[in-house]
Length: 218
Image 1 (cartoon, rainbow, N blue to C red):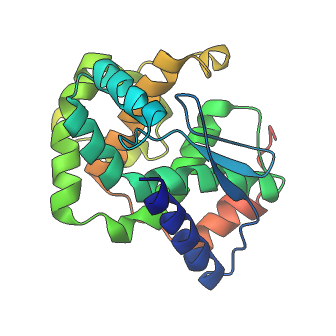
Image 2: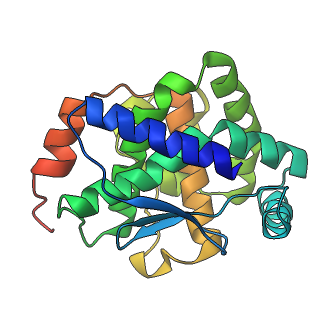
């Protein structure tokens, strides 16, 4: 899985370069449970069954996501282009000097890049299977109402099937951002929404909105 992650990292860098966006960050494995970006380094915590740490991580993810270890392996493998692209999104914001103080807003900014870079690589069958797999996970974790409140495409989510019956509440307090259960609940729900709604975007719009325009609270 790590070799695949490295390949996606390089592939995404080439795609970005073709769109006139240079990425300077480098990629490293992480020993914890949460992938992250900081100080020029994208760190991935992968449930790679070929390593002892990865196998333990896979078992922990299976328990917390209410999935089998085989399902966890498939899900992370299928979503690897998105996972790598998400952390690249954080790196690009940092390199542009645009990181803001709201961590949940920054997660949505990173998800925008995750969608842009991974969309061509997630075919309809993969997307449908992932949505089907994540739906009961989202229900069990209970983060959909919070995720809808902070979702960057609220209008796109309105009137879409089961989302009609979910009333947005509020995203968790920023102090809970690094709490694993809270972060997992939010990130899984936002991934589910992106996969379900499949929002369209462009690199030009991303560059203008995320890398050039300053937010008033930045």
